[in-house]
Length: 233
Length: 104
Image (cartoon, rainbow over all chains, first blue to last red; front, side, top):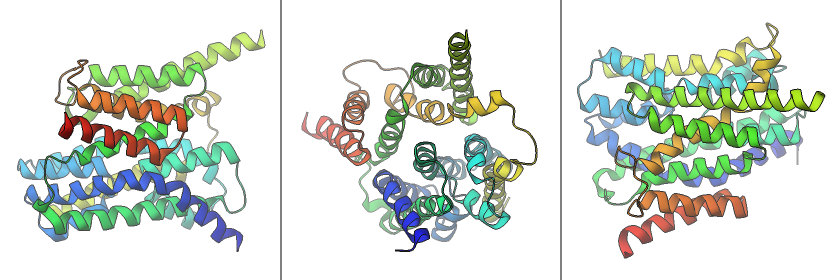
């Protein structure tokens, strides 16, 4: 098989388990978007125009609450701030790519595509076809998100609200974070981010999430610095 | 504001943030400290999403045994630590929650 195709499929395969968690989440999004009063076309198109699950949920909720358009736009932006962190984190691996590739891969930079790709890049390093791995992971996630949103819109209220389908997402994130917890600075970063997220949960526009992430990153970096300072002594 | 305009602006801002550092990288020197910090992005962001989902399912802190999402999440964490298998983790956590919800 051609090397590019091999990398692409490796990306799809790495992404696959995460898709199992994403699919039910897309179902609920579709159903909920209709329930909030969006019609089918914008509900479906939001999945490719905004293409960021949790912000789509909140946007649908705000449409339901008849919030002003500007508030919805800003809320989407704030919830998606974490993508800037992903962008910074994955940027060194994409540095040598053409502007066209960068433009395309940036569009596909979601939580799940990022998680699968960054783990692969950190463990395997870069090869000539590494960007195809990202494309495979990102595209399969994109495709699954479109299809599951469509199913959700189509099935709508036929999905019983007692099914805890939304739980699939935190489970996916648990599966993504556990393998990363290899040394104590990382564990401390995860625990402190989690603790701050609990305390700051009541902040508006999910600002607590950003605050918590920054706290975790700060603590992790601080401990790492202290560790490497000790080691060089 | 028209819903299409809202989505378009929200989408453009989101895309801009996704592209931001990918576009800028290589155009200036990234400080060592920042490079070091980036390793902590995945665990910090993911934990910040997961903790409230498990510990505050109804908006307030709930450490009790009646918190099914906490129990199911704990099982998922054990399975993840044990197997390092994403699919098994999701299935185990989901099965645990369904059993707790419907069978008990």
